[in-house]
Image (cartoon, rainbow, N blue to C red; front, side, top):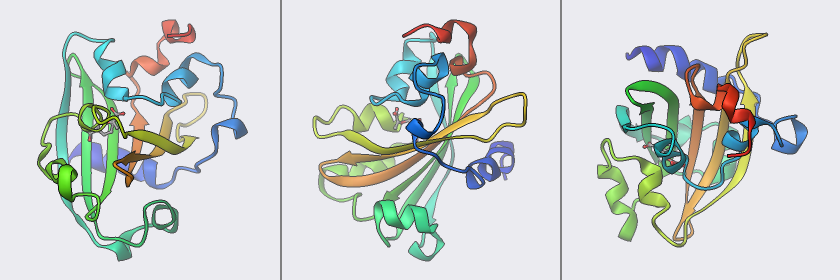
Length: 182
Ligand SMILES: C=C(O[C@@H]1C=C(C(=O)O)C=C[C@H]1O)C(=O)O
């Protein structure tokens, strides 16, 4: 099992998700990253010379293994599970876990199963129908070091997928300059 899965999946599993307005993230430097409505991948590309995705795992997840939260957001459906690490200039920035209902992997979206190390967001957000909702955030760090995560539902051609992202220690979201609006 990769160190990323061993280290980071438990952190996402125990996240106590909150709506952004219930937290103090809005208007902060890191908040602009956590609340990014467009593609995070596109934003990361602007903050490094070489943005890459490393595929950690891709497998089928039976509907019985969904959490109640997940089931409420994407339905009681079998899914494709995709786990990746997003890297800027080779430095791990985000651990991401995505649930794509098999019913979303149909028609024009059947290619999502063969993404490999192509960033999911660059594929999804090229579609004019793409939108993000149900965004929640959580601090899964240990005081005084925050470690922020977010989860949101993406829609493409009115079909959902659920993305959870853990912003790792070296991500630009924690950089001093991110305190400015950008
Ligand atoms: C949804 C996006 O895609 C990003 C890339 C992912 C992947 O390649 O699996 C998963 C989550 C995101 O961090 C995005 O760019 O906003």
